[in-house]
Structure formats: structure tokens, C-alpha cells
Length: 260
Image (cartoon, rainbow, N blue to C red; front, side, top):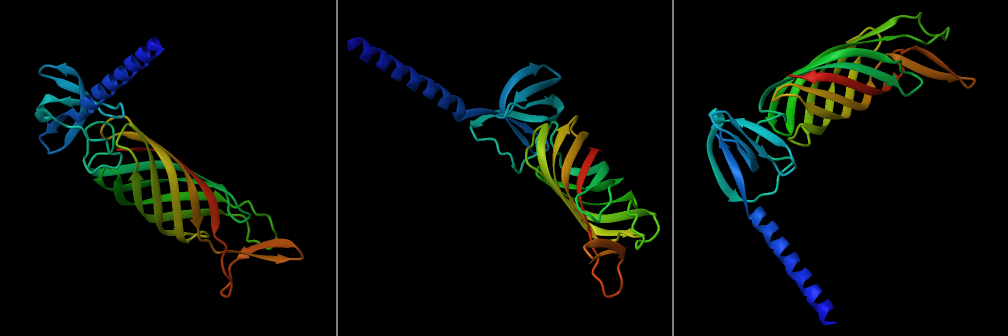
């Protein structure tokens, strides 16, 4: 019994020591203050005199900072890393200022009306916070009319030229980050035109402090001039008349692109 009590006591004391040591580590952390006013918190793992240092943030992200950008290095009370913080950090996450995207796009039909179509778009805007981007964009999409109903107009390609506002939320400040994106605007075209709405969920992979690759999957709604009536349980496609309601396209959107 005495041995058991002794072992339990030693384990308890060891656990308290480890906890105290962990707490002491969290009480203070190294803070690199930059000349532009930003701060990077974590543990400095590498010093390269007259060149740079490497600091490891709480999530394991390694940031390389050159000495000519550093104003001061201090130790401050530990603070948990914020995934949606207000401070920009140097590295491969989104940086404050101008930000642009170019995407290749594919839209997969998910209803009986829409056509598969593809195209490209470009967006330009401003990164206000590490998590908030707002801008505007334009693009071009084309789809080949697959409908063969005799009631429908002769086969012709649909050309669409969307113009839209874009808001994006990057959820992390690290190299890899999921993001939410929403585009809403108006499309000009020969058969598909009017309101467009395209929210999506994607992932960003930073390559440098400005260059990154993006991939996303989303939902797209696009107004058209196509109407559908059902006669004898048969769907008949035709162009919308003055007293009819059009049937919008509903598609899955797939985007792959770069940002700079």
C-alpha cells in the first residue's frame, strides 16, 4: 500500500511539474514587431545574422522574416492565436492591399433546364482584413444547346458575360486555408441573362506572400429566357413569352485558378 501511495504521489507531483512548465511556456512568448506596425507571435527557431529569422506560430506555421523589416523583438504574455485576427502576418497568407484572381470555371447542370458550360473570370479588389476581401469581376461562359425538342429554337451556343461583386472570407492566416466566396451580379448574353448568384467553398494554397492557388466547389444560379411547360407529361422547352416566367439554370460550379 505504501508503495502504491508513493507511486501515486510521484505521478501527481510529476504531472503538476509538467503542467507548471507548460503554463510557464504559455505565460511568455516571443513577439517580433515589424516596422509596418504588425506583430508576429510564437517561438523563434532560427537566427541568421544579417539575414533573417524564422518564427514558429502556435499552429505550427513557420514565418521567415528579414532583419530589414524588424523593429524590435520582445517577450510578452502568451495570447492564443486568432484564426480570424485583425493583424496581418508576413508569409503565405492573404496580405493587406490589392488582390486579384484569374479562374478557369466549369458548371455542371443539376436540373432539366440548364446546360453544362465552361469559361473563365477575373476578379480585382482589396484585402481589408486577413479574413475579408471585397472586389468586382467579370468573365465569359459558353454552353452548347443540347436540347433537341422540336418546340425549342434551333441549336445554338449560349454566350454569357457576367459582371459581379465578389466578397471572400479566408478562415485562416496560414499557407493552407479554407475560404467562403460569394459572387452576385448580372449576366449579359444571347439566351442566358439576368441575375446571377454563385456562392462557393474552397481551399487556398499560398506559394508566396502574393501568389497562391485556389480551388472551389459551389452552387450557381443564372437567369435565362427559357421556359418549360408540361403537356401530356412531356416537358417542352421554349423561349419565354411576355406572360411567362423563365426557368433559371441551376448548376454546380467548379473553379481552379491563381491569385496575385
